[in-house]
Image (cartoon, rainbow, N blue to C red; front, side, top):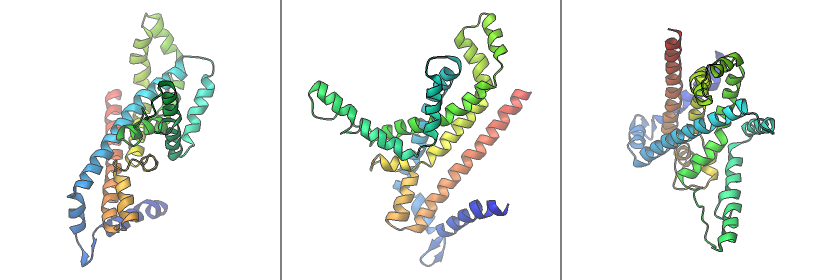
Length: 264
């Protein structure tokens, strides 16, 4: 309890204290100014929309990769699985740098297209847009969905699949009615983790160079480090903490509700 208070509670209390500090003492003037600004509303909407799109993409791509790795044997599947684990160990900005070298305006893909078509203008120019950030986050965070699903699939009794197949069920029906219902807790856990991480992601947004794409973490950095507006940054950080805690509490409530339904 002492460790939790020192590591988690104390910094949050300090942030809240800083957020109500004004030149004349304490008050809610900074909160009113920050929450009423158009920059905050734009950053909040952009943060939530990018996180939601990235999470949806990770769930779709991660489920596909996990099913293929678990149930569709092919040469090199073990290598692909280890590559998935390797991505988990890399910092997020390396993915962004790789995307820059590949899909940037001076990247390898644009250079190849220009060589083929003879057109010197870059064809691909999406990295500095919200779509580029979403694609980069899907690439980086998909393993956080794949790994829990693979663990869940490994615990699935093979007899259930054999019985379903012997009764004439198609592979799609076996996947939909046997495999995925057993793996939904792992899918929900992976999706919730990805949503939490993408809500707080800063490195990918920073290294893409998307100056017009300002999320809440980027706005906190701008107000706290660039302009040295600590009270304003503390207000934004408080909102960010509230979003994360709300997501965690919502996940726990929904998970408990679904578990109770399944048991009944």
